[in-house]
Length: 146
Image 1 (cartoon, rainbow, N blue to C red):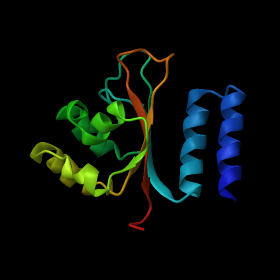
Image 2 (cartoon, rainbow, N blue to C red):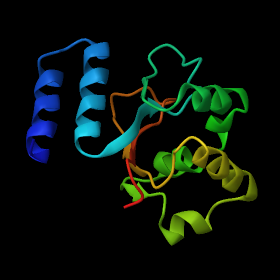
Image 3 (cartoon, one colour):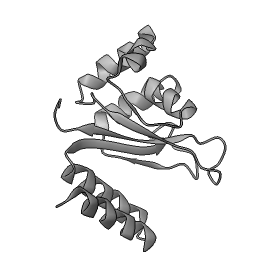
Image 4 (spheres, helix red, strand yellow):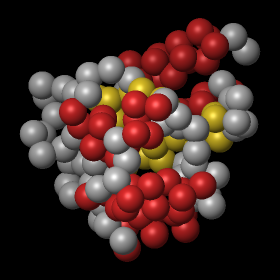
C-alpha cells in the first residue's frame, strides 16, 4: 500500500468519528505498514495513571510503560521535554538532541534501548483547544536501525 493511502485511510476514520480503540488499532496498523515498530501518541503524563481528558495511545512494551510510570520518567524524559517546547518534529538521533541529554536522561535512553525504543522521531502536538496542562506529542520508532 502506498504511504499516502495509509495516511489517508487513517484520516478518513478520524473524520468519520471512529471510536478511540478503533483509531488506536488503525494508527498501529498504519504505522506498522509504514515500517514502524512502535508508536506513542500521548499527553505528557504518567502512562499508567493518565488524568481525565489526557490522551494515551501507544504500542510500547507493557514492561516499558510500567518502568516509565514507576520511575516517573515522564517528568524528565528528554523527548517529552523537547516536544513540549518545540514546534518542529525532531529525530532522537541528531547531535543537537543527544548533546542536550543530562546523565539521568542518558540513563532513560539506555533503559529504553532494552525495549527496542531507539532511533525515534517525534512530532510535537500543540493545540489551542487542548487543556493547558496537557502537552502532547506523537513518536514513532522504526522497525530497523535504517
